[in-house]
Length: 613
Image 1: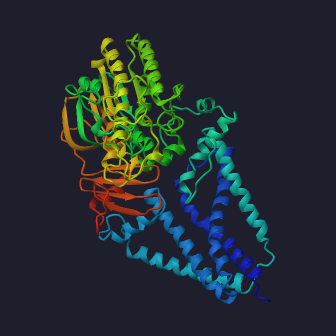
Image 2: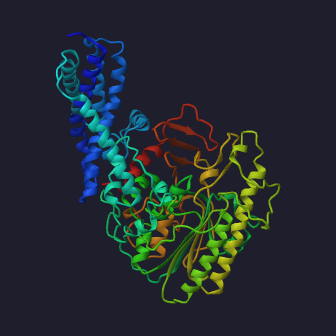
Image 3: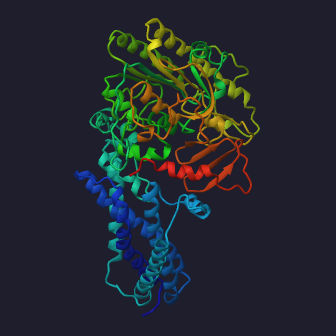
């Protein structure tokens, strides 16, 4: 039979499709970590994704063979096909091992850790394990070689309808993504909780598009799924033991967040109201770091006491933090107020997924106007709450003006010179940062004025001394601090974007200044212990420590972005990006030549998996 390009393409495509049953067989190793669905939508998604997504990966693996078929005859083409097939199956098998240990998929960083793990701190394999690995690779090469020679060289399987098979893969792939779009918009856990186990899966979403076109009412959809009982994701060992919480008294709890507030923007000039109320009576943490350099992970770390590598799973399963569900169980009234929309950053399906009704947004045409309206709405809510003397309350106020560099007309602007508007397109390596930093500081000053009203009302109604108050930020903000053209946030883990103010005051809080390194992950354990009376060991439910522990000082802390994370030490930051590429820099973001992984990196890898089953 003539060796044509069409025949080679068909033979290599059939060879790729034959891999699919082998891929499914190996992928069964993910199934112990799959939250099995029990409803029609969840089961349909499982079937469609199992066929469509793994089928897509197989077809992507065929593309190099299709290119080689342009230049190689069939009698030689089977050799790269054998190597590619064995490599793909071995990589998938390795990924199942990594996922079982760490709940994230293999990447370049994991390979680097393996190569640098000289003492076996993370990877420790017995001789038997190595023999099994070698044996599996040899078996894969033998099997793939046999298949490649039969299907590519001998042209067996001519009657197999490869076009129809590819069509089925494509249809199921589209069906999988379409079903996820609907399930994500309707907060359907049985579908979304499956996403994390699949390597290289990036499911489609369209909630905002559906809402804009009137196809979705997110409040109604969310209300159907809010569930205080949904406290434990199926594949998390969290909490490790049932919580035992018996408070001797129930102080009010309040969390104030100012978006993108830097550590150096707290003081008598920038925040005079906060300074006057908290500097002498509060406990201030001088080396405090957010758990993220962006809103999502920074705020998540504060409420959950967990690192950002858990966020995707918590989001997929819509698992609320133990702090919030325990407040609900203890009968706290909840006043959740945010200037930016909560559903826009996903907090409706994570931090406050058990809260119903939930105020998702604040009316207003600018961040500063929304901040003002939010403050007024909180004051009205507090007037009603103060009349219920026997009911403790929890409240969050999340201000947004600094994030938008928004200062309303007529507001005090003590920092000059200041730009009158913000356009990131105007920023560059030679831009003078002072007018932009001053604009940001003026926006913080405006929010401080609003908080002055909150503080005055708490004191006027006699609630100040009975309220455990946490004042901090979700993350910081860069103003080209190190001359590397970094502006804003979510771009690195240096101090400008992660070092934030942290002041705590209230019953049982000793005033003072804490010099040690602390983290947002220490906040939830503090509130669980000192406000809610939880007596469990912290290792049962948090990766952080109790923020009120005398002498607290972490040797390293972790912060995450939407796709990257950084391990922050006093003299360095180890950064791992979303593809697994890694870099070690000093605290001014200059690369450290010939740097090796520090012990903190190996500790962090063990720490990340603390609550996975």
